[in-house]
Image 1 (tube, helix red, strand yellow):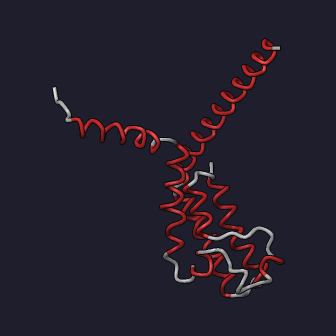
Image 2 (cartoon, helix red, strand yellow):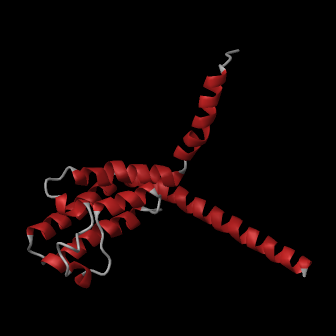
Image 3 (tube, rainbow, N blue to C red):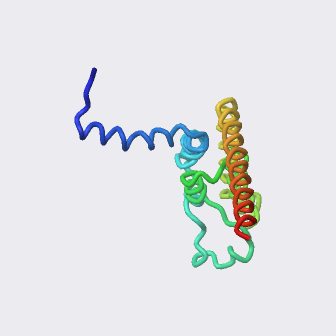
Length: 166
């Protein structure tokens, strides 16, 4: 039987929960979307205008024309916080970048054309991982239903306790 030293045991304990978290479907979904669908956008030569939020100091009219700003760093942050439970939420934000650019710059502006090309490229990347994304989305939905059921059960138990306490 192999015995681990105390430091090896402690290291394993730290890796255990982290390893478990990496197997959760929303974590795997975010990782796949980030690596295969978002990261390639940063390699595009025309991505620079979309990397960070539009500066309202440089473009003061932007906030009057655009109700819901979106950029790649915001999408990346949402992936890091596991906001998306499916590819459509991710793609809605990619499409929003293009819609905002067209609204602000016009459809024929080179920046708008790049925004549309980025959205199409992101969609194509998602489509190329359709089976993997579909399986992860199904697992995420199961996870959400289980969490909602647990919450409903907890709320019902709280109401029971409140009634007992009077």
